[in-house]
Image (cartoon, rainbow, N blue to C red; front, side, top):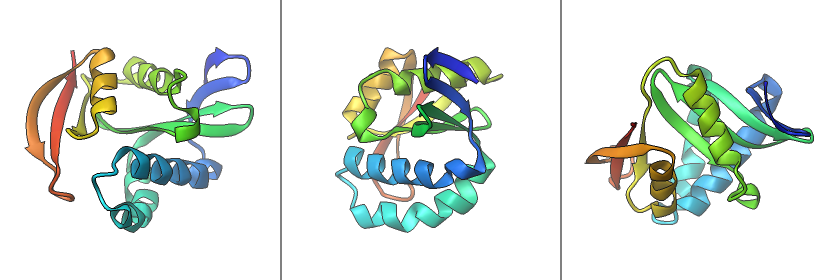
Length: 149
């Protein structure tokens, strides 16, 4: 468990965190990706719960007993980094990312939608560089492949 400040920490995901993590993922995905139909995200919930999260190393940002964000690391790929919209812009995403960087044994990479400019800017500010542009096979949307420099 990494102490951020009193009452706040980044810790390993536990089974009882699942619903909070799914709620954060769905709420933040819909808000950040308004260029993708909301139904797409709804349709991905089961796969998120049953396939993606169990396959990844997941960390949560917890404050005063409430999970407000999470990250998921799959091999050397940052597969997810989400903070509930009510808690964004206050350093939680940065804390989660720093935790993943510190615990990763390999150089990190990630994919981010090109149209999600706030996230592209965030990752750039944290040391990621764009390696290439591609198209997401699930949505048909342009995305960047980024590497931690």
